Length: 282
Image (cartoon, rainbow, N blue to C red; front, side):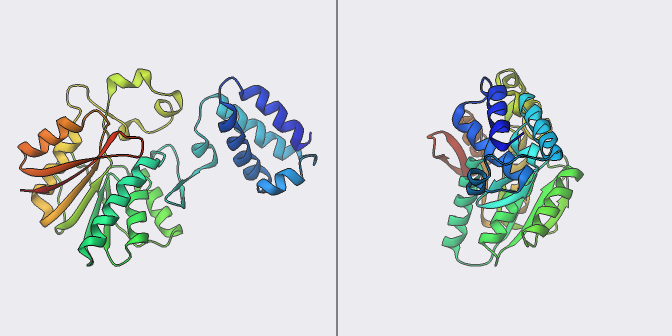
């Protein structure tokens, strides 16, 4: 079976599930993973027969897509701020809106113009912490997560990307003890109420770690409260707290932070949704 025949067959199988533009992109990534050919080589080799091993791999990947498995988990990698990260079922797939949160932190640190102590709470794949360290090498970066599996993967990403990070395994909801204060705390915590699960895409709710996505319907701000409590204790004077938020929780989080004696401001993402908050103690 040639590459051209594989592409035709795969498009027929997936066309009802995935739109044409996305499907072409996914096919290109899968072909490169199976054959090692980049996009130009794929055009040149379009009539080249594939080996049995390559065909079997491609069939397995196609079946995974039919089962709604995200391409990032199929390939075991994702991209964030131009860097490649290993990902698996223990960590969230990095998303573009989180890049905007990192950029806001970077802009703030550039304004301060001196080395700072930064803490990433709920690091997952490590994409926030590692990106901050790569862009702000003079800063000290610490990353925290409750998941041993997530921390193990984040450490591999840091090694692969040559980023020196201090790692902490702690549960932010319960007693948190830090060795020192931090100038910046940043977090993309779980914030989706469980009631929204029914309306979410299968590739998200069936594959990404539920512990990193969902919060109780009756207490959707539970992580924001816990992190703000830690910030009150460990945020350095004039320190800043940065959050990614659910698009419709902005007012509630601003009210929560005000009651906890923080000044806070909200920022929209590139899609015009309330997505980020910056706060400092009054």
